[in-house]
Length: 145
Image (cartoon, rainbow, N blue to C red; front, side, top):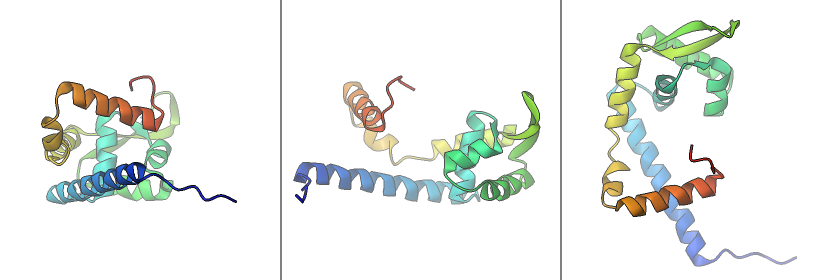
């Protein structure tokens, strides 16, 4: 049995990615708190501001149980940030959608995230394009979406 050793460059890249993720999550949680939201509520609101989504798909996106999503959506709905409506394609299915206030809150939340924007602004368009393309490749995203 041979032991595979990872080269130092790969270890450094993995550590740097981990640091970026940690710092992003810390800033995201802080920005969410400034809007009196938890990080999970902010993530759901951002998802719903992009497009109305069935509850089950929200749970899949967040990798959590549907019952957790129900509680999060309940709290967002109580604040007037989200509403539930029947899915036009299948009226038995409930979709959640951001209200106008919810969409505005999601925009303010996104605009408050300086962590990635500031360092990325120091990169040229070519460097940002290369970074984007490398990250897409790492994630197996090939269609540019």
